[in-house]
Image (cartoon, chains in turn cyan, green):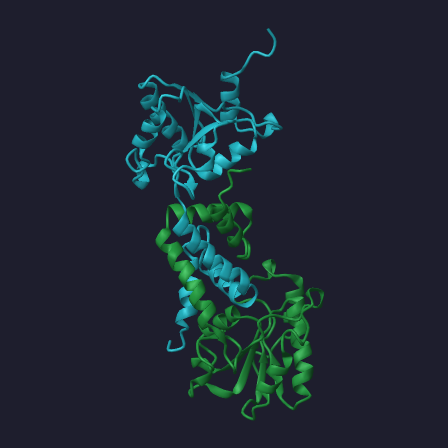
Length: 201
Length: 201
């Protein structure tokens, strides 16, 4: 085909690096940007560039940050005795939204996944262990997901952290708030039964 | 919240200008770009910028082009007597993929949609009429979609073009190739029946 528009093809191809975007949506996105939202497109190009240039990992919590230490880790009103370990910044954001936690965080930026070649080295477990050994941290709250990989990650970390004399806790498992037993997985019900809690003295 | 990361928020916001991307996917995309595909992100920023700078509308067919007249319109082996009118570059690409059409195209870059304020003026019907009046065009093939808006667009154009003495045709409606009647809408079956064609003399 001598009729290829390299610039347009280039744009369509580059949109495919976004997760969940296949050839069709990349094409639709490219046309949309060029035809309907050139201002948005310009802003997108600039903000991707800015983010790449300005964002790094916070030296303490490993989340994205514009500073060496992010404002959350630098906040003196946060309790340095508790460190909550999550897989991703999105998980951190969910916990923050509960407005019930004022300790600090550590973001793994992933989970153990041997099949994908992601082991303790790739997740830099050493950095977390060093962070947890700062003398202030008393309790590590493991808040990785309750998927297979998240559970394996939590167990691996629990072993390493407990060996260093830290108290290690895990988010509780059970029936979701508002959940009906009829629509709850039997695995969850079995867990909720096994981990049942006293209601009245 | 003094803990906002403006650069990251900015990136997440700007990703939402892409069609079909809500707050959750924008967040996931941003983390993916920053954490897993910085090379892809850099390429994305560059290609959006390049496309905005380099692409314009072909003076003849209105599709995206890096030149004043796109290579397809400039190709002397294409038949200038037939002009196929489509809604979008994606529709044009579909027709090209059939490898059964060697005429020229005109891309409306939309369809009539009065509720969205898109009328003949917004779609620049005048440009198409001028293009169709170049003296070479003998037949206009209307290939807008068979949606309500696509049909309305086709009918409006047919009236205008026929008044200028041009032969106006429309893609046929009917049961899709490979389709089973049982799984075909009754509207389509009714059309296919009404527009039935002679098989044997």
